[in-house]
Amino acid sequence: MNDLINDLYQEIILDHGREPRNFGECDPHNKSADGHNPLCGDNLKLTFFLNDQNVIEDIKFTGEGCAISLASASLMTEKLKGKKIEVAEEIFKDFTNLVSGTDEDLKVLNEEDSLYALKGVGGFPMRVKCATMAWHAFNQALKD
Amino acid sequence: MDDSKTLNLNVRKDFPILSKKILEKKDLIYFDTAASAQKPNTVINETNDFYKNHYSNVSRGVHTLSVESTFRYEDARKKVQKFLNARSENEIIFTKSATEGINLVAQTFYEKFMQKGDEVILSLIEHHSNLIPWFFLRDKYGVVLKFANIQPSGQIDIDHFDSLFTNKTKIVSLTHLSNVFGTELNEKVINICKDKSVPILLDGCQSAAHLKIDVQKLGCDFFVFSGHKTYGPAGIGVLYGTENLLSEMPPYQGGGGMIGDVSLEGASYAELPAKYEAGTPPLVEAHGLGIAIDYMNKIGLDNIIEHENEITKYAFNKLNEIDFIEIHGGDNKRNSIISFNIKNVHSHEVSSFLDVEGIAIRAGHHCCQPLMKHLGVNSTARLSFGVYNSLEEVDKFVIALHKCKEFFNK
Image 1 (cartoon, each protein chain N blue to C red):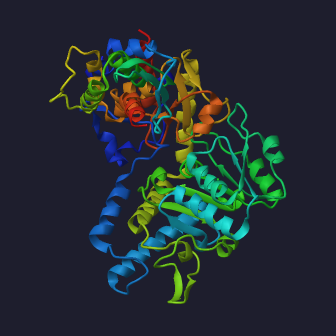
Image 2 (image 1 turned 180 degrees about the vertical axis):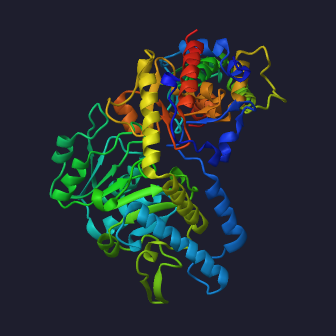
Image 3 (image 1 turned 90 degrees about the vertical axis):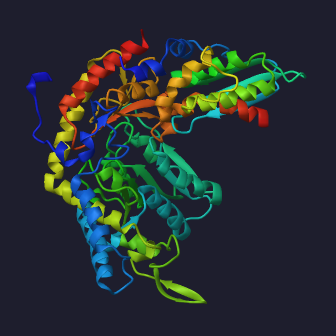
């Protein structure tokens, strides 16, 4: 099998694509945003609860999409749960660099991280939007 | 390949891009002609030659290059007129795209013939480019839009379509060939419009290179198509309109080239077709489209259509045999387009997987989100064929599909 395909669809991606974790809606939540990829119609709704210490206490998503977008959203929720906003924002920056093919100068992510499995997306520039949809929704929710 | 069958037409060598290796080793199999067709050498060389040897602005100067450019631009219009069998060159307006043609009609037809509360009939299978220009009329002017249902076959439901007409129906705008199903519009639909004396616009983006077009025989009032889907350059589109309607409708954009006489108090407008061609047009692209039409004529549209029909039928039968494939639309005739899904695998995965095998297909909503909603799917994979495709390519595609299914269901 082709290396590019194996890099893109690592076992963890296929697993989270088939069975996304934290799938649903947070109750209660005080932050939410919709993600949408106008190129293909994939979409998601992200909800989370930010406590008064600025920690993401719970975070969930619903939606429909390809394995990459679902796995990315699923891995994101796993990673961000329990994190302080400042840390989450650093992870967001690192992740965007990672899937754009620039994994140098990463501040908080490293190869041990499950999110690193999405590095293969860099080999498919048209799929970067699939991988970043949930993250952009997260970023949007912080701004609103 | 089944029955050691081969097709008569082999024009692959005319298309230089088809010798490109994908990821340095895979032969390119291009099954995305419905998104945009590849270009033959003649189109590439002739557009180059235009810039090298004949280029200037059109219809303005009197020097040699201006004459040569204008000749090529207007010659392209003649070729398009013959290609569509329009009555006159005045009925051929060059635009930048088919999309611009639809926007032009929506805006100027409204201005001349419509008011708040008037109705436009569209359908569920329309491309966004034949929806949004009309949404603008609804949002800005209170025009009412009605949408014809489709049958499981992908054809418009004639009875429902007929029932949508009222005395406020002013125009109908429909796709001539669905970019998702590959189904051709039933001529009864056009006849109903004729009977009711309501003008109809046909979106011919998918039909222009895959069906023989005769606008007079079709009886449509407007017909749009794009150069890039007919083996010509991107950046050029065509709007055909009957001289009566185009004469009565006001200009679309103002600028150079579309005027009669200008003073600071006002202006008179040029005659057709210049009236609708404000600004320097995509002249080289128009010439390239003319060359693409020459190319299709040289091979023969009948031969092209027969070739594509053979491949489409072959691919349909192959796909239909595979239990994990779901084909969208009914079993009626498809013209060079098949939409499908691998069960439980998103079309993006299919497309990325095939990409590394050198196979280019489209995945997504095909700019038809209302139709996707109707089908109850988020996206589909789409195969679409052109003059350069072969049965061998379909065989390779089918093998890759099986590998794809295996990979994602391991």
